Length: 414
Image (tube, rainbow, N blue to C red; front, side, top):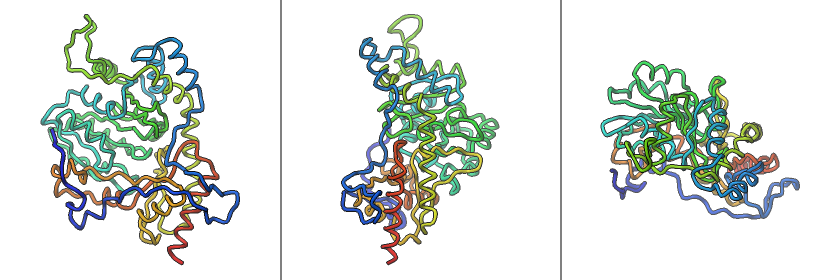
């Protein structure tokens, strides 16, 4: 088991210390200087993301309370599993406590153990690599490619060894990975492909849904995700045997022969009926949420595309990006650094988040990957952040936010 590390960003060396983002700027609300009265949002904070609870969430939740089915049994859990799996073009869903649990549960169902290797991108949220570490397997990192910001599938062949048991493609910020060449390698070498689709609810690759592109997929339903249950997760798959084992392992691996009889080391990774009730109501609105995300992204891109030094998010010709977060890069031409622009936006009540800090730079994993460099991931970390991205974001808010970005550019060049 890895132990806590005392390494700090300054220990990474002069060439890497600048990659680590600064602290989040403090949000403030001031009198706005954009001289358009209808865009006056003085006194209001625009959060980076917030849930949209506009369907039958309250109705279904009250039904749980009225019926006393509030724990890990009840009609909403199988209904949510079936509905969400179908949205991913899959036969089976396994609801669980959160997205990290979904990843760990899926990897545990594969029987990973020390000595096995799992390939994943260094540019991801730390839950992905932690799930590998929980199993005792060895994580192997791969860089991103600049076109989609996802793992560079062309580099994958050089990372595969006889110990490779799984690959975890991460559909970064809602844009799917180029899956066909990845699945060809999986067929050739016999490894399992477990999609980390935490950010990609409804995303499509050549008309097929994320979560149904590999052998299985793992989703998060945290409050900032397109579909939320507050906390929660789901495994999706078309493999009946894999789904059955994951279902069993999430509930202490109770045996069907008798209660309190266990043949596997299981987990208490269950979702509650109340969470599933919210999840079902959310899934019923999923198409609308995705449409809103894509509409908002189109507006953002329209307003930002002419501002020098701002790189808008990618969408490959074969992809349907759901823009979980509207993510941009800040280049030197803009005149401010990424962190300076974030501070400027925060002064006007606009909350933002930096891109992920790559796994090879994380204090807990730094010694493991010391000396390895992943230049694209490092560039993304240094230059990237995301703007407010809730499904409920209004065109007025988007016009206001992008107006502040333009104002920052103009002041930097005045």
